[in-house]
Length: 429
Ligand code: PLP
Image (cartoon, rainbow, N blue to C red; front, side, top):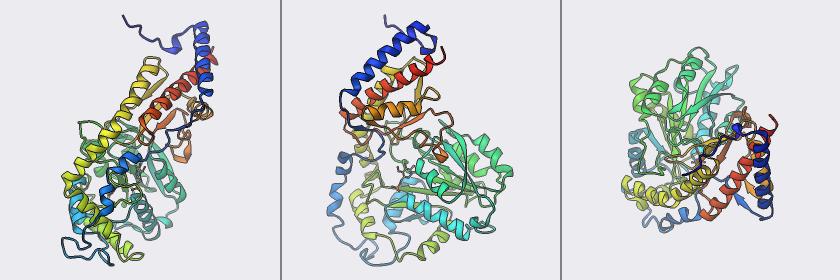
């Protein structure tokens, strides 16, 4: 018969003291091991990058299927074949997709900067001339989104992220009568860091809800659209069609890239939107560019061959990283399960596990881990203004380290979570 673990909060003071003592001993042992591990980096491992190395010898010819010499200027929207390939994967029309340089985050900043300076296709004036601009930020979320909006001086309002997407009831209430709320962030598929997948129903509400701002924008950052970790391949909501059907075609602006498909430093970024948004974006782009890196785009086209080639390639990534996620899940379940001191996500895709520890202990866990040689993302990173009001969320990124390091790091993290929880509960005695 297996003994069910008891919730720590149910232990008597004496039992808790014994438990805390045992965790302290385990932690002291960790300190002697001289660990140097890192779970902060949401990036592909070298083995994942190796999967794309055949690309380094491509393209075989610089002339694309339309006879375009990719070495030369022009073609702001990107070459036709890469747009067609990724339009199919991202569920948009090729004419509604622009292929650019390597970073989609740069595209997000560009779009925000243009909205700020000149306004969008449906703006009454540039956002920078508004007295206040606010953005809704599903939390926990992607730190760089929040850093970017903060940099513009945009006021950030956190809204909860659920398993089926952001809290659309709360969002609909907020946007209905506050015209200063100009937009929101959303990672719709395998969100960073929760792994949430925004359902078609939630997406439909988001694109159809009445907004006081006529030019409300959803920054639909589909960075992990194709990054499945299981056989259950979640489909992203068809946001552009939904928005168009709802009469708000200009509301979503879609972003994606091959940063975690081919090379994080030399991929291809994509921007999708209504035809008017695309024309607006190309006009903006044209002020600062005569064309993107089409040689790299052609290299990608040749390497994949087709949209199916991209899917097959993603299955090879999955084979490399799914075992690391399974290891995180195994250790969290074995070490923390049933104790009532932590919950965590077991994502079906993406790059992260989101761990919630006992309220008020996330910074302590991160501090303990650091002293033991395990780097964790700083507390609060996944929240606007880097502030987690409950001090409970920790983002774990298991893709980059080798699996032995994931195991060692997660064992150490579990010990730190247990020790921090025991310390916290003892203060309540
Ligand atoms: N969006 C999300 C949600 C991410 O997690 C990341 C990288 O971690 C990016 C965008 C960065 O994308 P890119 O490399 O295309 O700039």
